[in-house]
Length: 245
Ligand SMILES: [Zn+2]
Image (cartoon, rainbow, N blue to C red; front, top):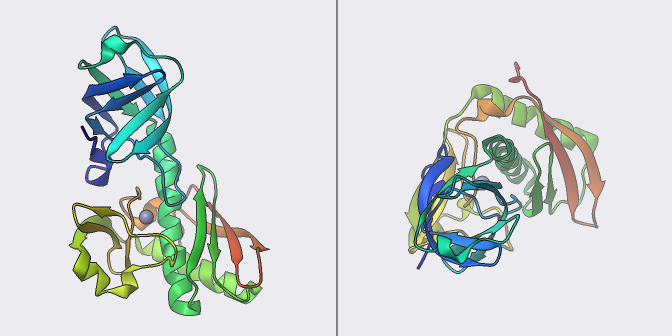
């Protein structure tokens, strides 16, 4: 039995009831999940489960096994939970931070691709910073300043963000939706999920994002690193106030 992934279409949903499909030691599978399972450089969501007894236990990670998502809990679980219902709650503050940084990396990768022809070679999001690697030969202070300036203009315009789906053949006919050479697109039921920053960019992605670019606040590229002849890394931090360019 599979886990229906609520986070793909109901990103604001953080609390929901679900049926327990299976219990194995300290892990448990539900029929529905609002928890992002991790991927594309975005860590899995964490949160809590409330059992029928009222006991609240921590969810510290997610394991994807085919179409089933297992929650990894901080303690062993009673097998009697199987077939019953629990309430699941995502750590919303952590999710919002990760979604803001994830969205920032979309903006950066669109700008670097358009202006400097740089493909993504890696990305990692945390709750207080993110890093992104590009296939670029050079990373000059002028390039970094230009990217940062362009990103803040996109944030200040407060573009809405939405997800939709394209059949695989339509996706394959639109190479501009692809930003990485190494990772297959997020495919569900023969369709590819597309995340669109309206009026700015669209790209294939299975992660969680802000609802509009203005939620990010001012963006700063705080550090760069040379990770090889044609691999360059940027470290990004977001402010708490909306940029006023
Ligand atoms: Zn994304």
